[in-house]
Length: 366
Image (cartoon, rainbow, N blue to C red):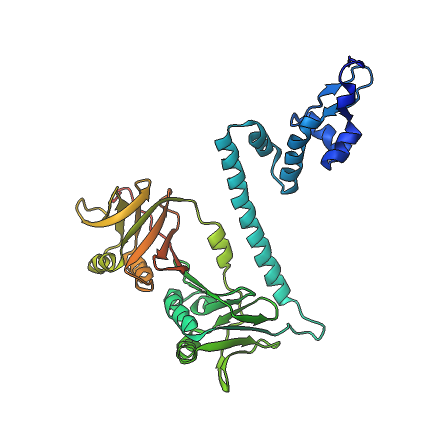
């Protein structure tokens, strides 16, 4: 039983403590039952809970973590586990929450864009970007579009118009190229359009010839590139492009990175272009290439971090990603699982990324 003559004056009733920390009394009872925040004392006769002011920090931390949706078992780790486990739990949850938020934004924007306005049409959207940058992005990304697609929309190039950036995307489902451009001015809602394959070359020529261009999507969906009195109509495809956001969010964690001379790697891949698969294995300071099934191959100098990893590609597929990259070196980000996508980044241009699917290796060639 609680000693009434002890430190009663220094303890707070559950109601007073709830007001102090911004929680409800029922929440405090729940956290007591869960073992996260026990009262300092409980009156054995009445069952009243009493808290000390020293418990305010723990209660406030619980409230903040619950406010961002952190699960109770992770909160317990943060409060009572080793610091390295607490950091890992928070970082993992933050990454997961970021992915969920991106998917929620993407879905919301897609639905919003499909909703008619009061007159039965979507509002117009315009963005202004530097012309040479748009031309460069279209040149880089368009080779990833499908040449003979079974899904017609994959032959086009996606332009995702947003308030902060214009994202250019193409994919044939085996590799994807993505580049983001800063937007100088914008108006209207975020909008995705898919430029028909036959219009990409004309768009490149037009954009390259003007310092700044305005990309306009009218309320009827008509799309144009404009600069001063010059204007180019862009035919578009009325179809849903695959969600590149979902692909980026679902990429596995990087287990190893290798930076290698882009031209040298491309030269070696050209010599192996008729092979079904070329195997890449990272070492401490090198990258080994060999045809799947062969014991010997070529060793390239490289900067490697993380685990020693092995993955295999169709030579032409990886070569295509290298050819559209920029700069003397290329960065490959490899997952732990050899069957998961590999990210190929241009070492000199962080806004350009390609994602390449590896090939599965049979037991004879492994």
